[in-house]
Length: 245
Ligand code: URA
Image (cartoon, rainbow, N blue to C red):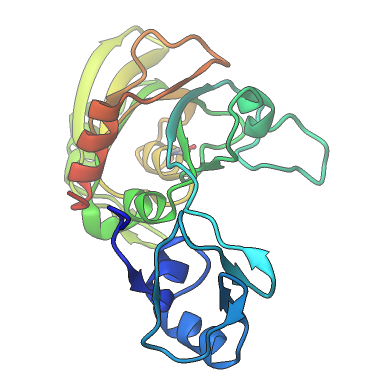
């Protein structure tokens, strides 16, 4: 007897990442699933993934691929996509040594650098970007001029942009001279070009922008253009931050 648990075929197909359980039931009823060479078209049938030879349309069903999360220091002048129709360098060029295909979680603008997470875990990626989970993202920002006390308060408390008022943000002024101000800004939402639009709204265009942190994950001493696979403890912390543990 195998130590492994027999499970209903529809559950096996969905756990293997093939389709939802409901869709899997349809595939079974259509006679497209076989176990050890015999078509199984009733819904109660069970099997053991990894032991029984389970096929969909004659192709072996394998356990879902290992999930991984990668932290990349995206340099400026790279597009956050796997393929660019304009032929510009993409973040995919920087994670070629990683054996599994990983996708960017959200986006950094072409001219923005810093921490970008990439993963093959769809649910984690979805939650990290969903406003409901309010994952904090921290940016180091250099702006032209100085926002003034009023501008700083508005950046913190909320600014009306064309797509609505921004949520409260944490802000720290690091230093300023007579031309520019350096600050850190932590947002719990992620609208398009949000930092740039917020700073422009207080009359201080962004000159330089770097994302340094996403939830519990810090850029640390990662070098520009380099990536590293997150440790199990970091992935746990990240999953916890979005209610997946
Ligand atoms: N805010 C921006 O304006 N751009 C980014 O890429 C990220 C945050």
